[in-house]
Length: 246
Image (tube, rainbow, N blue to C red; front, side, top):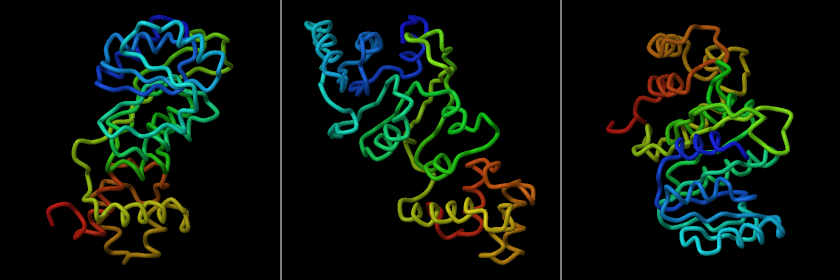
């Protein structure tokens, strides 16, 4: 990423943090910008040549630590931290999985392929299985688009900024998460074609109808077109004892 405006938009979208981990420091353009708003930046660069150049470039910058290695092998910090980075398209899913598996992560602000960003944040009008599964604990937002001209070399497609934020309070109690995920995975299996048809194979038709009415989901809606909040509402009606405080 070489466009200063695009870099500034990523830093602004991420916000200030105490500790930031950056996957793929590259030439250090984003690294240096993050050091201007965050107390500590640990950047990972797997290419030894680039890592060496970045270490030389940032020598004397007390807030920046350059690690010559693969971010995916990074130790998860014990203290709260954020991940911010312009990630390689080929390993975007692996980096997102690493972030979602880090207990002390507060947020991840990632520059990804535009299609990936739109798919995960519902911008196509459809919601991915991963987004719905993680919705009780994480929010997913499309925070802006980044044109291909902002990069060198120029890629074939545009990019976007994806914000993944850990909710301060989960929307489901910890003991209910496994049941919720099983509920969502069953619904996404598409055994009945539409979501209500699938759920009627497991739950009484009358209860499914009432749940869809309460969640304001039209019968016949396919699973990917159901908003994550509506999935929670359906789960609430069909598993009422598993909501927090009950």
